[in-house]
Length: 404
Image (cartoon, rainbow, N blue to C red):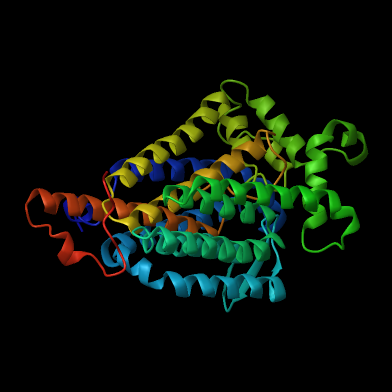
């Protein structure tokens, strides 16, 4: 296949593609550096094992994106949204019952030779389901209010289940849902009420935690918040923890960093290649690397916003909003944890952190925004050529966005 033919398959926003490739390069460099100690502990010193595994999953992720762009129309996600959501509830529940403990990111469910974290699947399912409900109710305010209640109830159920194993993923999903509802024209008073109620529940659980049974990760979440608030007082009692190592890594990095592959902190930090990979980026590449990474996500946010603004239909608009929001919020959480701004929690840095099937779910999320971008560009081009008839091509369950 020559270059010209390959370009026909690479659709969507080219700048988002460039961001993806840049994130891949950073990922391979830092994963190779930060998994050295792990390779000696678990792979007999084969330091290429984890970078090859990361490369394999990223290639598979690119393959999944290309399939989505060329063979799966956006309207298909509308049609499978309900089934995907209910299947996600089953998968998350099964993960709690029969799943095994994961490395700080919740529980892992094995289906034959494949194992994955149900929370990662739920992230995609929630986006599809919420986008469908919002898209179907834009012409009727009463229907929109009913859909908003359904969204809060359904999201609340799945977030409650996820929080038993992965509290941060539950918060991430809840936050993404609120942003989608805001874009979906749900009344701001309703959203503020839900946000206040959610914060109230979290605060109440925090103060009642000592009186409650040790269910799920309840005590772990409280302890991490306490550690974040009183870290200096407890340092002498518990010794260095991962967030302490992250601060040391950032301090070592300085302006220019210690150099590629020269991280020392990754040898002592268990999650250096995952939850705290941003601190290793700063250690090796300094403030320069620490600025480049969030800049790439900022570029992605900007291009995603442009894609959303171009959409003329409701479902693609909300689908792209959810995909962009969850990636950006997850990146912010990871970088905030690494820099000590918020308590420790288990969220990988999208498309950079080492991972397996989670990489594929992240690729699917990127694929959603690129699919919307691709179809929006095609529709705009067809309209310019006077061959675009909205009444003839819109699916029954989708409507045009009002431009007023």
